[in-house]
Length: 212
Image (cartoon, rainbow, N blue to C red; front, top):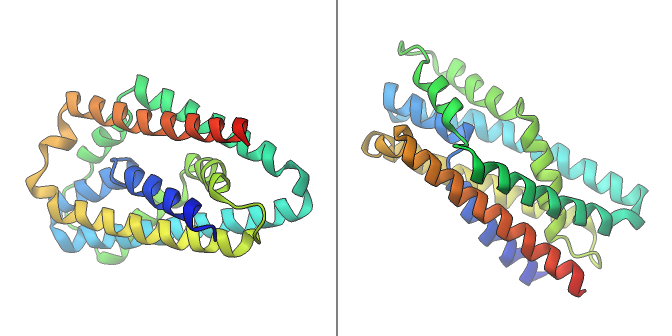
């Protein structure tokens, strides 16, 4: 794929995957209660769920663009606007507060590894917002002069690997960084950072569209 677009994609993903969301919250909660092994099992399940969602999104986008290639730019404009809207929501709200509180109230009794993997898988696969985000995010970095399929495959694989590394890091560091996940002020800061990044990405992409 276009090396400049791929570099921009990797930078955007690197910034986004380190910000706590529902999956990170669950990984941290399980790691704090049951240790690294359970944290890694949660990461494994969530990564599998993300892989399925990303794969389905990529296949759907390839089919869609092959069917209606003339709406490619419209999809990218709408997607950029959606990223800005998500950023505004994240900026105005605590973002992960409800999920953090739910995770904090989860049973503390250890569960079998298969149950933990399933738990991580379900929290990833049942998140409809993730599908909408992928649909809005991935097309922004597609080069319309190159086949969409290989580009989407590479971006999906890259995003899965980067998220896996980030989530595993959270599992390792959770016991030493608990304050970052339970302090209301820092939850708000996370929302502001996440919102600012999404708004910046969306505005930048809209500016590129307007200048092209």
